[in-house]
Image 1: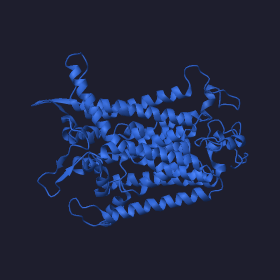
Image 2: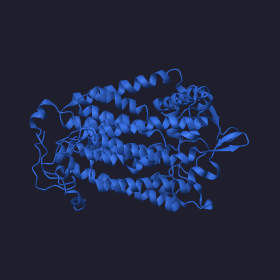
Image 3: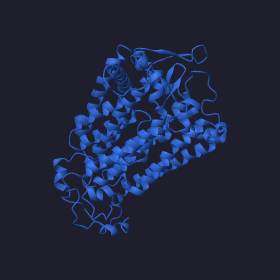
Image 4: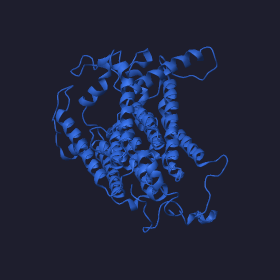
Length: 495
């Protein structure tokens, strides 16, 4: 890259001024990049929203497994009908019978956390309003499910723009790291696959609030994120660990309290009147078996092993698998705790957050492809090695076409299961390698790019005592692209 830059004057010098344009600031450029990536992602989902004229009128064109052939599958399409949102059902209050008349018959409710379920309901109501308005005004219209998915996509795109904004604000001395978040192949593939960008936005905004010295707001955002997807609550452990090392327990206490209050305030209005519906999320996570992308399924497939629970009868939870998965995650958390408490210097927050979320995904019995979005901002904040992260994101994004083609089946010229699971294994190996790199930066702070250019820990609030010890400028010249820096540079004073 440095050699290539010679055609435009060579690499940046030590005294170059960056971001002084009145309009095209780094933040606005990153937001533009993100908008282009999101537009590309939306075009990738568009084939699943095409219509055709059937016997009863316009129909959604999912004929001949189009959602897998075109790799445009999005959960919003089937869930609109499965959850009876097209019929005005209220999540958690209204139920339906799944697999009626079979041994698997079961009463079902909305299986998402409260805010995600209400998000779907809100967009269903917006769809109704749009269609009723389109009957009297010249508004573009389509099948209700298409209008619904369009509304959902608008909010999901806005959420990812918030993620990009928060990452750039967290790294004012390294604003171009945000390009990895804005241009990530995982965003192009998964931004509209499910509803995960909402939780990622809440979690990333929480990190920004904490860095700005607003722990209560950070806690509230983590609690809100936990009511969208569970993973933002996992970030509370890294907050506590960093607070312990920095002897700042008050900050961690406020974050944890804010998260508990926010999560409870959001959940109680649903849990009290509609307890059975509210518990569906937790029940389903207990009852479901390993999904195809999990390590447990991979081992079972290649070895012929029947799994920890063997062949289970219908609607029987995999008790042993649940226990093993939970124990493995607890073991990972203990290892991360030991690492944080025994490393030579107080660890940065972002690397610990990345390790916790990556550990959960690796040992959990479910790793849906879109869950990889959770790691994108955390990875960029933890280890901004651009080539390595871009390589991981490309490998991870390739899991999606492998998944779609495996669902198609070999009888329809789909991908054999062995090839699909091989792709997943490569992805898992790359994530493990990233974890090793993160652990190395924690154990050897001198190898940490962020400490070299952005100070001791830009993600933790700067207390008055730390402000006196914090360097007034970057510790060393990081090189033309922030990739290389002198191994002998001075290290900041430990706090």
